[in-house]
Length: 243
Image (tube, rainbow, N blue to C red):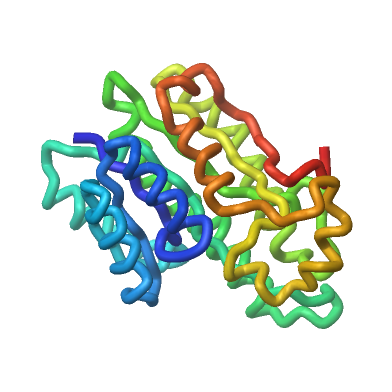
């Protein structure tokens, strides 16, 4: 059986993506770091729809935790493999660079970039060995494409993730593994609640923030067989804010 793993799957975009994948009939592994209550809520929603879901707790930025969790899952599922991976885990620690503590720089880079590296590297061999390959979607950001004030760390992490997406896509294309990135703009999630939404909406040609479900629908397409000839791409979903 082929499973999907969504890192940071307990809230916001991750939650919406988990629910959308479950509607495809794919069993979903919901990764989370600390909020077990929220993760269980997502699992319950999936099961209420008739889907299959499991929880997997680990911090993506910690190599030992990630590898131990994934090894444990594989030992428990010897005949299955994770064919769909959505690298969604990420955090923000916004500040002007001249005032930015070392810890905030490293925390953002470690979660987004090292998390992508540790998890993806671990899962790639199984994807590459299977005849039907795999699908990897990396959640980038508008910040990684154009840069945002007060987000030097976040912009650096997401821009690096975009570069990694393009390079990895070339490495694994011959093994039927696709690697793409999605770059959302302003999406209505917990991560954007403290932002001045009324002011920012005026910058968006569509005059609104996006919905998590709209982003999840794009991810669903990239994971589907219909997207089997799309790889190495970065697809923006930002209401026309940056084209």
